[in-house]
Amino acid sequence: MKPPFRADHVGSLLRPESLLDSRARWKDEALSADELRLREDAAIAEVVKKQEAIGLKAVTDGEYRRESFHFDFISRIGGIETNFTIGRAILQGEKTKRGGEKQAPLTVDVVGRMSRPAAGIEVGNFRYLKSRAGPDSTPKVTMPSPTMTHFRGGRDAIDRDAYPEMGDFFADLARLYREEIADLAEAGCRYIQFDDTNLAYLCDSKMRADARARGEDPDELPRTYAALINACIADRPPDMAACVHLCRGNARSLWFAGGDYEPIADHLFNLTEVDGFFLEYDDERSGGFAPLRYVPKGNKKIVLGLVTSKRGEMESRDELKRRIEEASAHVDLDQLCLSPQCGFSSNAIGNLIGEQEQFDKLAMIVDLAQEVWGTA
Image (cartoon, rainbow, N blue to C red; front, side):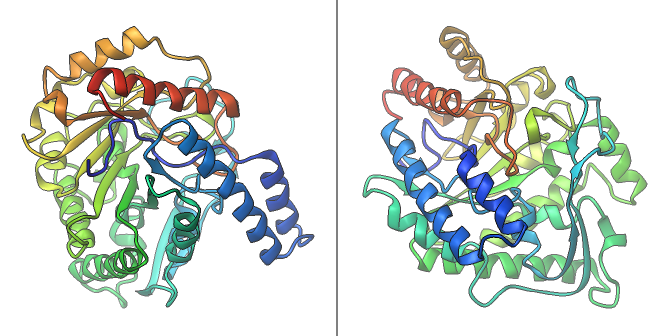
């Protein structure tokens, strides 16, 4: 089965305390970058074994080398300046249930023509992941969606001398991603995933209003972003799966936005030429399954994020099966898969869940997928 798999996961995993300590020492210049990487290598080798032991076919490096799911990738693109902090941030969208400290949104300013490091961004990291994965595993590379460089700042965050026309900006961005994907493919990668908060934010009425205030049309952006994603993956090998994961915020078990998929569903499912969509469905913020009626019949898969990564309490298996059946009223069961709604550690300081609870949930997903579909 081409990914996504019946039992899958978004990618990030809780960092071991020892690795968090090593990263803190590296920031304090008490540990060299080379030594930090060796410790990351050891931790990644261990977490790959754990993923394989519970029966997951897709394995990731847990994003163990990253401070966050987006910053480490985007900040390595030449011509881009970023700002990213953890602290007391302005709440966007609906208020969180938990409140308090939040991850400040990543800001991106395009200050010159964009370029990509000669050695790539995730290529070396993938080669190590592949070297630790077993023959029956499919190593997956996650990367921030290309939309992340546009949505939060829009036209005003993109230097007009470097990119007088927005079409040139989108074309350059797509070229950069195509180069990265081509090098990943040459290294043996056959499963990539774009992590996209912005498409999900376009489900939120306040964030749609904010987009209008920036001069953007929230009804047109899903079409624009579908074209951008399609251009990024256009040259991938036929046997490489590409997925998009939609998220309304996840850091430290908090969230930024709400709203069901109805405003974006038609363009998202019909115009975006990917193999699968990982959709958040762990609570009422994501609405019901009716927008899945727009999913075209065929090979596109919907990965139902019914299992929360935000807290440790285990979901009822019967309730999960009921919700899968409910979703299948709108899209064929054969096009459905199961996963957590997001990663367990969107940034280095992960969600409010224990490490064993994390793996217990992943193991339950594998077991339930085998019960529902006969395979994980």
